Image (cartoon, rainbow, N blue to C red):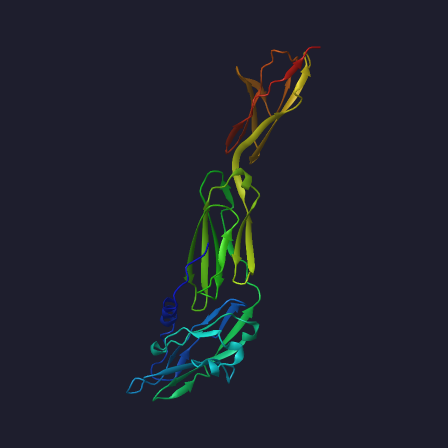
Length: 322
């Protein structure tokens, strides 16, 4: 499963909405103090800028990003970009709308450090926003996804589980998958101007075999890196696989003890025995039959817990003559 890639004009619209508070009469820029991302994924630095408005609107804008004070990591002329950043940086903001957001893809360990934006306008001034720097932190492994599901579920009911993962790369979010079959749905939304979240919801119906099994959500990133979270399912179900155990062959006139077993959660709290004529006076998981004859009828056992009850198949003793 996956999610549809979000268009950049949609993303930069968010950036612009969040940073419109810059001063329109001075050289100011709005960037976060820091952004963090996963090595091998991508990262977006949201950025907006302003400048003293000239009488005539500048006809051409050139946006430049520096690492430190002088290493050019983005320039519209790629020959000006230092070798390590060529092909990895893209200006995703519209400079005419005073949006200078930058994308780095893929993110490398060497990207740790501080970055600065510079604007150059034809027939107008040039300015480096050295007071408004942003630092990048690079992590080698993402945190596990956040997984939620009810602590107790019942067989046959519809259960919804949710798995969420935050990330720094809106165009390449992690892929969320489940260990259990069901109906998944995926949504993505923006948490802050530097973080997004993808959420997968799984609707499924648990069975008795799911009890004490792990429900696993796996987040897979580009390049093969995966992280997982799991929850152990506590599935409540009525007795199943009810059966009678004991000797199947007995000599006529002897006595025999039989025991009723069942698989259930919670454990069965009562057992009842009966034959074709109706219930027998014995209650409990064991029954003792005295003076067995060839006329002794087949027996049934019913196991009951608070979720319901289950019946065994009939057990017909093989009675041998002495």
